[in-house]
Structures are given as structure tokens and as C-alpha cells.
Length: 440
Image 1 (tube, rainbow, N blue to C red):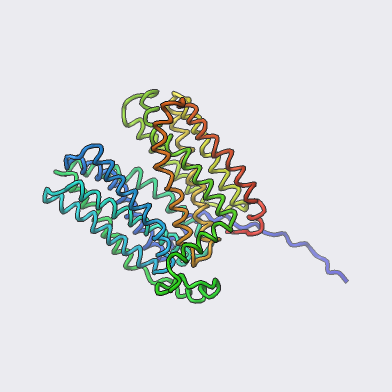
Image 2: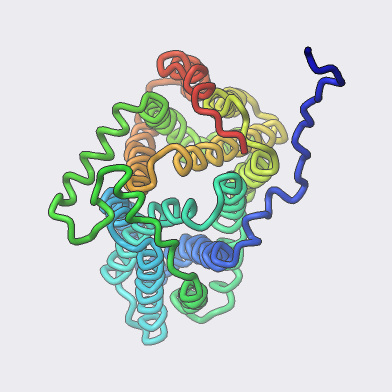
């Protein structure tokens, strides 16, 4: 006899209005995130203090390029080793060590400035050390989050970081640095504030407790001893393992290839050509270009908050790549318009879409990459994303001499948009995301 009665209707999950800040309920994440806030703020200040300290030391544009390049070289050289270290050593120990090194580097500049002994060589070494530290810090930070937070809160945690980064590194940090530099006797004196931020970050990191002791079981499941710093398998084996995993994981491989082309065709026009476009079409006031950069940063803050306030999209791979592709279409407007408010709106949309996709991407790495190699895969992502940035910037100027500006911005807007559909199809992302649901 069949049972009768009302058929139960599934109740949709309630929307959590506090989802965005739920990770802050975890003590260790609060300590870690507060330290990251201070570190990013210090990085935003350093971008301005470095410039005026070079000038104050009698440096030229060539000297400034040398110092800036030293930081980029340090970052690129240490991105991959930083990922290997994040999988072999204590993530907590790495972030503490990086903050200590940042404190020593910026503190040395501040002390030298107080003694009137700052040199270009000193600044170049400090910049290299700071860049190298970033290469170790962010793979470790990405790898430690899944060990501190439940899976359903990783999206919100990445959204918090995605929101504060543009707010502090592109806005608050440089703004405070400008005020401090104007108020002190020598620009290098402002480095005391940066050193203070890193010192406080280091103190906060000392309160982060050891990670849960589940590494042995996890290593056994994956059949790898890469997390053991005494393993004879070696660094190259660790790196090979991550590369092989990436090559055999279509959604990961094709997204990284997409990001590489995305950076190549968009960063040069945005960073090199946009200032000249603004100057020629709108006006020479430097604030006009600064407001465009601020619009990108504000868009990034809003995009991060919006995506992390909701559940992870069911079609997360498709949504991520389509949003990234759509975010470059406003580049076409930047290439042709002389209406300033349209330029501001376009920059806002670029920043919104970029950060929206980035928050999803960071969450996918933390949820779908095995923990024992998350640091290495994160560092590969970090390295690939940055490797072609200087190439894009180097090509933008010479290409603009032979190709009209509107055509360059048209290519920058259309190529990533069209490529998003190709990547989604080739990697069979709709099938993959249905086979691997992430309901959180």
C-alpha cells in the first residue's frame, strides 16, 4: 500500500546578510586578516614613499626604474620558490618571517633617511627584498586559509581580501603616504610609518595559533611527502608534481592560459596608454588620471563585496570566465570616447568585473586543488599572471607608434571577451562544474 500525504517541498537556503563578514568570527583568521590589512596598507604607502625617496636621494627617472624593477624581479624570482615553501614549511612561519623581513627592509630605509645616508643601491636592495617577500607571502596566505576556515566561508574570506586590497593599496595607502611625505623633513622619514605597520602586523601574526594537525593524514591520502621539509624528493619533484597536476586539470590549465593572454593584451593599454589618452582628450591635470585609477579600485571593492555576499554560483567556472571577458569590453569605450564620465564608468566596470572573477578564482583554487600542493599551484598562478605584465607594458608604447590608439583598445576589449567563450568550450567547463558542485 502506497503512503499518501503531502509531498515535501524543498526549502531554498536562506540568504545570509552577514555572509561577507562570517570569516571574521574565527579568531585566527581575524589575526591573520588584520596583519594582511596592515601589510597591504604598508605596500600602498611604499609605492609613494619609494618614488619620493629616490628623488630625495638625487635619483633620476632611470634610478626610479631600477628600484621599481628590483622589486618586480624579486617578486618574479620568488613566486615559484614561495609556493614550494608554502607546501613544505609552516605557512604561519612563512608569513611571520616575511613580515619580519619587511620590517627590517623598510626600517633600514627609515633609519638611513634619518641619518641622511639613503642611496639608490640601498633602495634597490630594499625593494628587491620587499618584492621577494611578497613572492613568499601570498602563496602561504592562500594555502593557510583552507586550514583556518570551513569551505563555505572561503568565498567570503577571499572577498574581504579582494575588497581591502584596492581600497588600501591604490587609495588609502598612497593618500596617507602623500600626506606624511609632505609633512616630514625627508621622504625616507615616512618609511617609519611603513615599518610601524609591518611591526604591528608581525605582532598580530604571533597570536595566530598553529594550524590543525591534519597534515599527516592528508599527506597519506595524496601519497606525497612534499609537506615534509626534510623529504628527499626535492624541490624539483614538488614543482613537477604541481605542473603535472595543472596540465592534467583542464579548468585550471585553460584559465591560466586565458589569464596570461588577458594580462598581455590589457595591462599595457591600461597602465601605459590610458594616461596619455586622458591627457590628450580630457586635460593635463594629473588628478584626472588618478580619478580613473580610483574608479578601478572602487569597482574592485564593490565587485569583491557583491560576489562574496552571495553563494558561489552553481556555474562557477562559466560565470567567472564570462565576467572576466565582459570586464574588458569597457576598454573599447576608453579607446574612443572623450567624455570623462564615460571613462570613469568604464574604469569602474573594469575593476568590478576583474575583482568579481578573482574572488571566485581564489576560492576555486582553495577548494579544488589538493591542499598538499595548494601553495605551489597558487604560486604558478601568481607567476603566470605577472610574467607577461612587463612585456605588455614594454610593447604598448612601440605598438602605439604604428597602430591607432582606438584599435589597440578595441583589441584589448574584444580579445579577452571572445577568448572567454573559447576557453569555456575547450575546457568543457559547463560539464566540469556540474560534475564537481561547490554548494556554498
